[in-house]
Image (cartoon, rainbow, N blue to C red; front, side, top):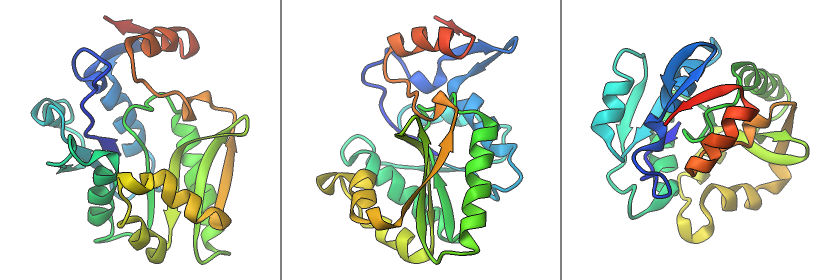
Length: 207
């Protein structure tokens, strides 16, 4: 999970913004992390942090996650966070799910469905990239299977369009998990996005 960004279009750390959903107040980052931690097929949740790292660590202090710090989050972009997260995951895994922290409204069931599909595909294919899709639009998460592909992803950088460029170079290996969940597309970049989320996801943003 990628959570290092500086939230330049948001006053304060957007991932620490509070919302009330189903009668419970929580931060955006905790909302997403709790979903990931509750999925039995996920062996380990690794969170790449950077901006306001101490506050993020405190927010997630009682959750069973691995936190890794990206010291280059301001200068080397999201690609550096992906590479740091993958390096940590590759110590134990050969199939990895990548998800940005600012796409918090994806449902737990959608993530679980994508993982189950990936595990089924793994029985038939040596390597693939599985991407969640809503109404023919690519979203998140992205699941990469096979150490070969994961090691190739360790070479991405912003100059070659990062993860997007990696996916384009391996377009023949891309498959999709079709969903009915607009949460796979809905990222939070600005305060206006959270205002819109109040209506779309039936929540209340604590301004």
